Image (cartoon, rainbow, N blue to C red; front, side, top):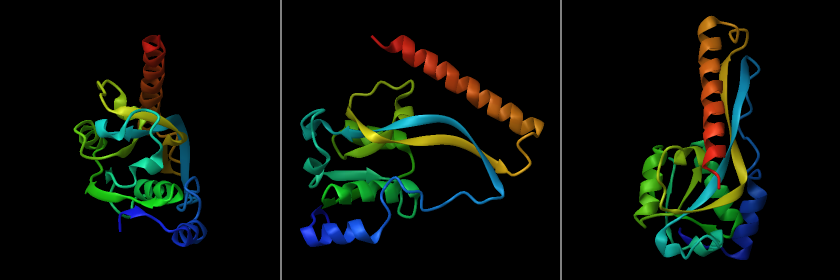
Length: 173
């Protein structure tokens, strides 16, 4: 049910689930993780939303695009909207973040987008950085991190992150 939540329903949501930053799916012990980068998240604002000072709760009656139900990204997005006091009107579902961006730019939806989606893309949507972010990492079975193919892949990804970081610094005014 899209729209604003009553105070009682808002409190019920807050007390029924973990806070958005909590990972409800802890990493199994048989896996090893290696972090690559922290990727800031943005509130992507359609042209009709008013501008970069638009507050999340002002998008309560706006259509949204989100990842499919059951995904951690969808769980997090729904929690953020509910914490802001509304149930989002999710009209579009896709795992394609470039499609999320295009729907926002066309004024058809609001979205939460990671910074990486802008890499190499001309973005015309209004973006407001959120205090939250996501961590990008690789995961392999415990003990397989030293395999030559895994080492080569992780090295290539680390080099790509360094190149992206250097390019981002050059693009800043």
